[in-house]
Length: 253
Image (cartoon, rainbow, N blue to C red):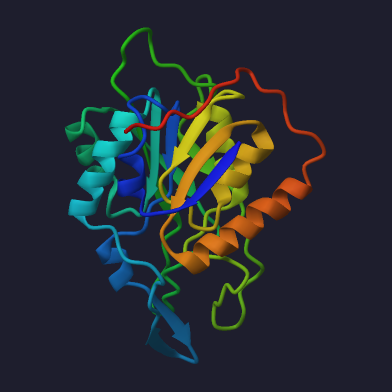
C-alpha cells in the first residue's frame, strides 16, 4: 500500500507510533550551501537559479532525525549533498541511531547546480544508519558489496541551457537508484517511510517492488504531481508482488 500524504513531515511523523515502520529511506532537501551554489550557465554568463524548495537547516535536520529514529525499526538511509553527511550522521546519532557508514551515489548530471564556470558535483552521499537494535544483528541484502550506487538520470537530455523540465523537483533522483536501495536494505512486504516525497520516486520504487510506503509532501503542487505519477506508475504494474507479511500502519494518539 502506498500512502502519500499532503503534510509537513515532522508534524506527520509525530502521529506515527514508535517503531511503526521497518525502514526510513529518504532524499531530503539540499543544504543551505548547495542552495547558494544553485546557478546555471546561460550564453556565457552565470545566472541565478532559485531552487524551488527551502534548504535543510541544522535545526530542521535535528527535528526530522528525532522522529525518524523514534518510528523506525531497522535501516535509516539518507541521501544528501557532499556538504552534509557528517551533519546528518551526527543528528541521527544524537537521536539514538547507530551510524554504520557513508556511501556514494554517482550521478550523470550535476543538477541542481548547473554552474557553467566550474565542474558540477559528480556524486552525492548516502548516510547509512541503523535504529537502536532491540534484538539480533543488523542485516542487508547486498552481501559483501561496497556502499556505492550508480544510476542514469530519469531526465531527458538537457537543453542548451541545462533545463530539466521533465523532472518534478530539482535534484530528483533516478528511479533505478531508489530501486537499488529498496532491494539492498528491505524485504518484500516491509513498510518504508520517506519523509520527503518530492516527485514520488521512492513511492514508485516501493510500489514496483512490493513494499508498503508512507510518505509526505508539504508543497501542494509537488504533492499533486507526485500523486499523479504514482497513480500512472500503478497502472503499468501487471500484478502486485506477493506480500511477505500483512501488516497495518499504526497511528499514535
